[in-house]
Image 1 (cartoon, chains in turn blue, orange):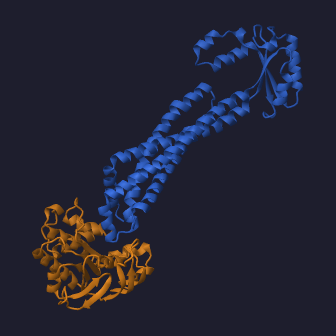
Image 2 (cartoon, chains in turn brown, yellow):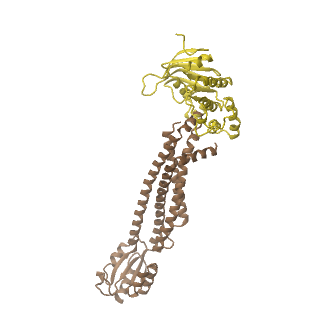
Image 3 (cartoon, one colour):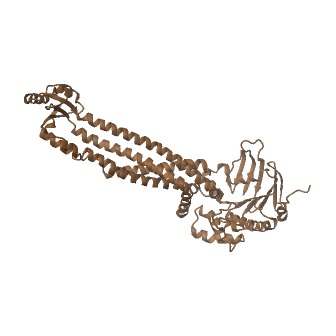
Length: 302
Length: 229
């Protein structure tokens, strides 16, 4: 086997079909980037799920003076009501811990959470913050009875299960992930067809050479390898572009979003990105090689 | 060397067989002319030897191998033992004489040192010494056919098949081509040549197999093109 010969043939083939090769590279790049984004969202969601579900609590917001929640009837919660509520919550089955969050703590947390949003911070005063009980449950799935027991109690403005808020966000992420994966599948299909066409053109362009090769007894491998390599190299270059896109996505999308959510440790790292890139590259190259082989079987009878 | 036993070939969508119960034996080192009008089955005969086509019935043995039992995987190895020359030369226009001949060895993975040694030898054998770096379009038809013969012979095949090699060449030049074929034949290579060229067949006085409508109507050693009508 003479590598030199094969590579010169591959180079000639790629150059002759330059426009088609570029089309293949772009399609593979975008398709693989979409697939990669889908996989990265998947990893991100998985991480955030464990991170958040560990922390979620049921928040029992108490009435403030000017609360517009109908349950408060415009009156602030009294000291007696607060104490009664604390007793009641501690007595509920499944409750692990109860924290009382006063206005000062709430204000501090608020300032931290909105550290990036200066106007919002400026517009908020300590008195605006509601006091609340943070209820940690032994089993976070078992929140329904707690909410039912506390909803409508005197002094309670609202009972919020944080999990509901998070799952809304997760549902949204899930939709983005599926959209990315569907686009990826469509593009991969388009890439396969394009490669088929490129290889067909290539085989037609070189029918003289392949005819002579057949005649003088070149093995099938020798005849087909240059075409398959063409597909493989196009796939590889497309994969490199996809990798660049994925790195950009990680920096400008995932890192930004993570910062906005201040989710701390629940963020995909570079090792995750690296494995996603490796996977997409392998898939890209394998698809290109398969598409080349299937087309060759039809257009390059040996 | 080539053994046809009751071979029949019918192409799809055609009623009349291209070859009709043909039995022929060609020994090692023989020179055989295959004559007959267009459509009489000469090209089919050659294509069957290369296993480019499969017969509908009958057995073909080439170089001791039963082609029916030869797996597709091994067909390239069969073809390495058979050289081919055509009416239309089939050279690669973007390669020079040397590269065209070397191509046949490169694609079967021969080492470069070997190629450097044998290609000039065979270019000399066909009478093209000094023209190794010409491009095909700088050569006459006869010279192009010599390149094609060099390419067919460079791997020292046991059999050389020539499908009307003088069909595009004027009679004077054809004599030179036949001399090269004769030289190749004298190295021990079996030569089968399909042709319409009566003058050549008559001058060579070799074995003549005549086909008509897919049947062998004459098989004569030291024959001539046409029978005395």
